[in-house]
Every structure is written in C-alpha cells, then in structure tokens.
Length: 402
Image (cartoon, rainbow, N blue to C red; front, side, top):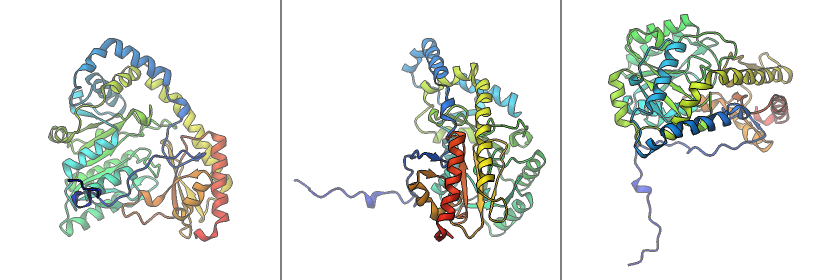
C-alpha cells in the first residue's frame, strides 16, 4: 500500500514543549553588539593545538573508552584548585560535574528542581538563555528590582513574602552577582551577605552563575556568594566559554551531594567531550591565567572605546543612560521610555548593526523596549566608534520608533 500524504507529527508533539521561538544561527554583521563573543583575535589557537597534541600523545588511546560520567578527572582537579585559590571555594573534584557549557548546568538543575508553576527569582533583567530554560520547565519567573549594586535586598524580601503569602513555592534565586549579564553590575560583599541572609531565612537556595568573574578589568575583588555561605545552600556554576571561547562548550556545576546525585541522573550523553577536555586541561595548566590577563587588557580597551563613543554620540541625561561595568562583556543602554529599540532593531540590522533589545532579558518579554544590551568583545575600537555613531543616527533618523 502506498501512502502519498506526508506523515503528520503535529498531534504527537509533547505538551511540555514551551511556546518559544527556536534559536537560530547568529549572524555576524559588521557592527555586532548583539552576541557576547570574546575578542576573536585573542583565541589561543596555537596554544590549544599544542595542548591537544601533548594530551593526545599522553592519553589519546583513552578516547577508545567512554569518559568519566562527571567529566575528565584532571580538568576537575584543575577547576577545584582554581576555585579554592581564586573564589574561596574549597571543593574537591568529586563535588562537581563538567557540563557542555554553563547553560547545560542550569538546564540540568532546572530539571532536578523545577515543577510547573514553581517560582524562580531572578534579577529584574536576566540572561536570556537562562530565562529560556526556566520557561522550558514552565517556571513562574519573578524579577527582583536592582540598582547599580545589584539585587535590592528589601525588594527581595518583599517579593518572597508576597509569593509565600499566596502559597507559591519558591525553588531558587538565580543570580549573576559579578559582571552581571546584561546589566553589568557587581554586587558588593556587604549586599551579598544581606541577600544570603534573606534566602537562608526563607530556606531558598541560590544558584550563583559566576561565568564572567575572570573578565575583571579593574582588578577589584568580589567574593563568591558560595564562599560566604555556611549552610550549603548555594549551587555554583562556571564556564570556560568567556575565557577561552564559546566553541569549547565546557562548563561545570558545584553542588551539595544530594543535588549532585540527581544531576548525575539527568545528565544526558554521559561525560563531556573528552577530546575538548584534554585540550582545555593542558592549556589551562600552562597558559590560561597569563592569557586571561592579556585578553582582559584588550577587552578593557574595547569597553573604554564603547563608553567613549556613547559619551560622544549620546547625551547622558534623561534621554540616555548607560552602565560602566568593571568587567564582563556588556554595557546596558537605557533610553527615555518613549523610544522603542525593539522596533528599531530590524532597521539597524539592514544597516549591518546588531544589538539585543531589553525585552529579551525581562521575564515577561514585554518590558525593556527602550533598553539594549551592547556587547563590546567582537569589534575593534574603531568599529565600535562607528557602530555607536550609526546607532545614534538611526535613532535620530527614525522618529517613528517613539
């Protein structure tokens, strides 16, 4: 029998799939302020090649075996030492799992903790990739008000009480306290302690995303929230994406044993790519810290170029404001509420200019039309100046966006 009609999968798709737009390949326009690329010219290509070559000579035959389910042990040992020395986190290699980037860590934890309609607290504007994951698990995402120093403790406590009053269950507070994405702030130690005190009082765990901490241009020290916690209520996520390259797809999660056991159950595909882990481990043990310093010097020049261009082409007043981050890859631009940078984006893209509108970072995807996240890692300083000038001109030339 020959059926000529195409098979219909529509009535077979799981009801758990959220109504979200699938991610697409990132275009690379001339002025790319949209995607958080590190500086492409500083990717340590020759060092990674030699590191991989050495690793394969020493352990290449081990690729015949399936990797450790928690990830390549020597790389976990390196991370353990790095966290202890630099972040005040004295954990053993057995207290972490390597993942395919920090987003897999967050996805795994969400699968372990979140049931539909559970509440997840975040900063008012939060990394869009994390928001997509929380929405994937049908979480009720509530944004907490922030200022230039991060989450405002009084608003955090207020929202927790309001949520608990109506009988909702709060599963975690997700925060990027150091060089936050997209707002760029750093939470001072005293406020980290206040936030931790509140979450401990209400028995709410913290998911601390620390994947930008090494992009520290001003060399100010901000202790990890994990290091300030004595109750083992903090889960910690890190990544190599911003200090080597997003293409490495290598991150890690540190958690209490109870959570680690559940994470091992939901981790898909076994251990991480052993091929990549071998190269990252050899490179990290020889060149990583030196190269982080040199790349930060490059990124600081680019950050300063964008700040200078914003000052030159925008007037810092009630019409336009922007952050002055001490590190990371982002500057947060906020225009007068009458402007609509979401509406302007297709116009900008036709002029080979990209940015990400503020709506991408707000839990309800409707607030922040007058805001944009501007990434300064990809373009060279002269291009940054040209791109910011173009953005200013497009805003002026398109009065229909207000």
